[in-house]
Length: 261
Image (cartoon, rainbow, N blue to C red; front, side, top):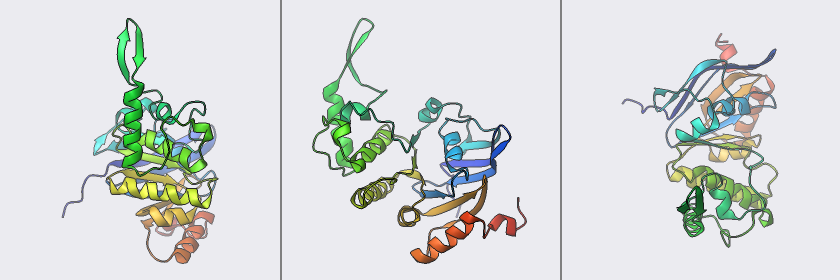
């Protein structure tokens, strides 16, 4: 049986910041309709790798393939055009605007033009936002609610809805459950599972190994800019956590053990 072409393939990605080697030839494959966990200690290279995929950084070496086609991603707008969206840890929401305005921020729908001036179609944006919230089973009382008055979990949900609202192919989430309550974490986990059930391909960066264990199909561990482990997420949680921590702290390194650098 021939395996389907991955939605994303990153080969031998390298990135330096001055004299610091942030990424030392990292490979990553994301399959269709898959949740891939990306873990590692601080400065392991996780966010750098994803910022390259999302267009925030340009790599110093390596290749990126989207659906089998070699692709040059030079900016976030390039990434967005080919269907790659990243939800950053700070969410980048406009607190003084309502839910609908945030979902359509930068992509406002216009109902008509008066010369050079476009008039926003607020009714359409509100109806479409409600449809998107319902599709992902997100409970927010009104799309006219001001974002700064919402809970942390609801704010995270809005950021995810915005990222997935325009037929994207890949959603990258940077620490989606950081600083959330237990109840809010549960809602975000349910949202990720719902996205996967609807056919999305997702990459999650997280220090919470419990979340990676619960939602991910596979995982990659980075350490000091190198990939040291790649495997399916299987087994019991305690065993999974113990093994992953060993790779994160450097007690184990699959690729060094095989003689691969």
